[in-house]
Image (cartoon, rainbow, N blue to C red):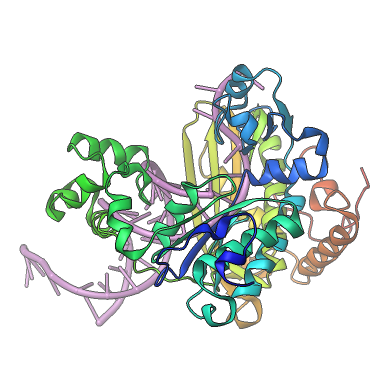
Length: 427
DNA sequence: TCTGGGGTCCTAGGACCC
DNA sequence: TCTGGGGTCCTAGGACCC
């Protein structure tokens, strides 16, 4: 990478003051849709969304689809009404993860201070990289060039003195753009923007603020802190007040680890029988437990989420006496929490299972298994069975083997622990 | 064809301990 | 006997983000 003037794609046009603009926000353009179009060039130029499921919403929309007013999070039905010839593709998470890893690798060539926010965006702190790679604007242009040339994808990059201004900047130069907000321009940039652009202002908070006559960032900056506190609570008020004045002390955190791991699924048809719900909880427990084990962790808190047909949603969690990574312990806890709801004639749209409160497996003071929960079989080899299943799935895919395939039609309250059923039936 | 699936953070109330 | 404050842990719900 050279000076900004040498950078292709005209992104280096910026010749203003980027001193102190050491925070970059890199945001991939229409990421899932772009990955799909990259491998199916015949879709280029067409309205494409990724989403798919029967009761689903749009996860990503190509810019052609957006011309019809289609946006992510819109229901698939509404999207199809706006554009009947819309091309709808089912999500392929593995492909997006692989593309994401390639993007993150390019970013980490610039600096180790990369904080991914999701598969398709990341913050970078380039303060220490300018000697090697040039000014922030040149670094941003270089990243955009590499992503385009090596990955055939486009991204937009915001360059600013703080995280949230960098993120706003990337959003305002999409697609395939770059925007530098010099320190001296931050307030001019922020003031006219609607409050809804601020981190933490969603529909509810916006409504509260509008009632106070606060519509722009400038309005917010002029509002006394006490007034804000009464409207949105102490923590929210302090943060909004700071952001409105261009202040954001957050630094780039490259080592962020997950605090919870969850899986949930909206069923195409509501679940109405106990057996169906248990089967679904088992499937979700397997998925979550596998991901916990993948990381070499153990969890102490297990939770379920249930969304009823009327969209009312409840959660229940239980903190166990010790830590576990066992599918059966997580499943048992989930079913107990479900049973505790005492539902009579359930109509369940969505079920979810979550683990939190993690430790690294070896460092946990104790390993909680079914045994320590008082199960009948003190010699249970269930953790070994988990490992066998994980290994089989890693080789042959998730359909290869699992507790789910072991279960008879009428589900038992507890999983078999004698080992005699520990063979996949292959169905 | 109303409303996905992965998360984080905050609040409020209760239990419990000192 | 009445009254209490502070701290921590746990749970449920909800706002918010991508």
